[in-house]
Length: 390
Image 1 (cartoon, helix red, strand yellow):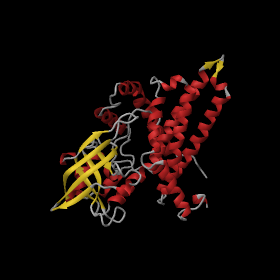
Image 2 (cartoon, one colour):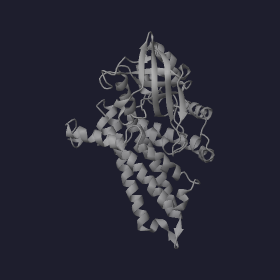
Image 3 (cartoon, helix red, strand yellow):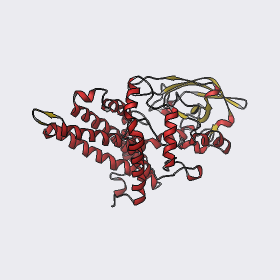
Image 4 (tube, one colour):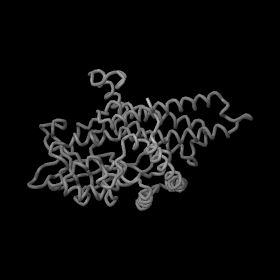
């Protein structure tokens, strides 16, 4: 087994690393200052400027097909770049991306929604989660009732990422209750904010925040159906599934940066006349963090590799999401402990990471849902112990 990267893969990763180090990391102190004042770390124009600068280096549309001007990178390569992005807490992401399910749009919808999103002219959000339907996505209630050539949407979505900034939402709504959510009773709609929905900011323990989206007799033309009638739940699961290896990829980057800070602190911080790194308690925290970090790395890369092979990635992705999310929480907790009181202050980004990564065990499938998927796959014989080595 050869775990080394090819020359092209190394070049792409190293270019991304250099861009983040030279163009993004210098903004960290200003981002921390703004966030302490309850302001966005980057505003929309600053993010756009950075993305266009990255485009000059060739970084535009990591997963976007070449026909739309993207890089169309492999899942493994995307995973490596998401790890590089995790090295900084500046809320930056490369531009040229669109929700994976937007590619199911027809030609007219692609001109109106997909292409402007890729080009950064429009911002989308994906809305499936509801107050009573988080992990239980099959329990959604928001309804879409046909009225002539239109559909009328009523209900609420919650914890929607980008919901406060988006000018259109991809909304999964119930269109046939008798068929049920899993039986073809839901449909996805492209709903402009101008059509009448509103968003309400949700305050969280992290920076920024998701939104609740309120739909009160919002009228949507039938031409705004994404995909086919009855395909909503299927599209929703495809959207959610993509995040299950990108999230832990990002977590690896955070853990790498945090652990490096712990090493530097352990070498230079002295108590009782010697560096704290000479203490066994500190050494064991560092060792445990390195082992868990390396284990998570290969689980995540295995999940991404599975995507590239065209085989069902759900089992591998669930393991990567479960372990990666837990790993970064444990590593950041140890790094904060190693820094002592300074780690608890807002002078360093450690407490920020501490709040940020707690979400990783919840969104895009909770720890409990990943365990359910993994165990059911084994109990029902969908996969074997040892996976592809069995």
